[in-house]
Image 1 (cartoon, chains in turn yellow, orange):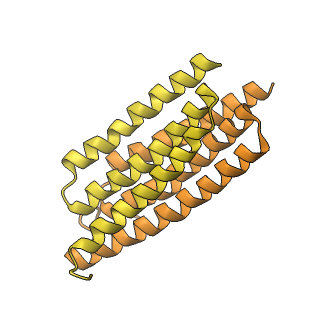
Image 2: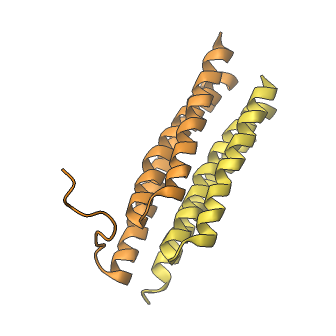
Image 3: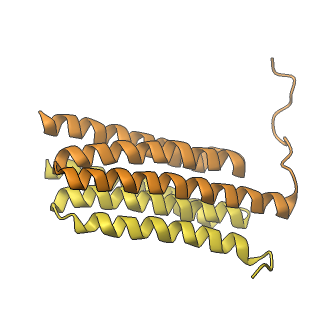
Length: 85
Length: 104
């Protein structure tokens, strides 16, 4: 079971490389912000599977913090250029 | 038995997640990429959460996983809305640039 979960983790990490490609290629700021969104959701999925592999539920709290940080990061980046507060 | 079911949910979740990420690579425009991110990826995350909940098997952890999935759903919806409205203000309404409209 652990081998299967680790293979799933590897496939997820390869999927997250798609986000890095979009961050490099994407022709505007908003395309690069979508890669932030993908890394946030993908990081949460990765931490869920790692919590199942190691059996420790502390990684689920780390996933919560990562989800909040990804949302706040894209909110901050879209507000910055408008000049509002 | 529980492990086989959890494995099926995990494989399905990773497949949906990969489909959403391939959509991020291949779709031609920002707004369609946002669709792929907020729908397919969150569905894959939900299926992965069900698989992990079946593996770990504690009621408190299952509730926590479900609530974190709801939070990721709402956060990615809000983020996608902010990104799309920022793109609207930067460059105006999106135009159809690629496909001709004569396809029935």
